[in-house]
Image: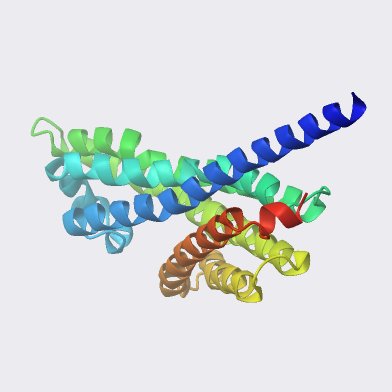
Length: 255
């Protein structure tokens, strides 16, 4: 009876872990799709991300003209950012093996903060900026009203943009990927190149923090780092998929 109960519990644990792996792999594949969809839609419509540095007089009319593309593009970007929250938690359970992993637990917590900070920064383009754009483009708006809109646009861009891009991407985003990659290297159950690729992505995201001290050198690093991050996600998905399919792979070795 005890043996049968233990066997049933083992089968349930294996099934639960298999479900976690399936959802983790799905999210790891879905994230690059959402991010590249956001890039192509926004780049072709409002010249994103170069447009982020443009003043209100340039961007607000574009938002009115390309309202549909802005909603679709930033909607995909917001979905990508919010899905980092469940992904970071699922990676903890998918990668930790039999024993708890304090390093992966910290990485998961940092990933949750990253997702929320990113969402705050992106949300302005879906909720606040369209309203400001309509007021700015309204023929009935006075010069004083347009000037006030420009001030609000600049102020909120500095605040929400700083939270999203600096806190959400350059700081917590880099640390989430970096800590997860260190855990991959330390576990000994994953290809070494996978951990090194994640560390490279983390290092390339960090220079974005230099804008705090007035050094605008992080834009190129952020673009390259972002692409390396998406490649890392796809590579991790492939490794997890192959391990799950293999009888002697990750799932079997971690029980």
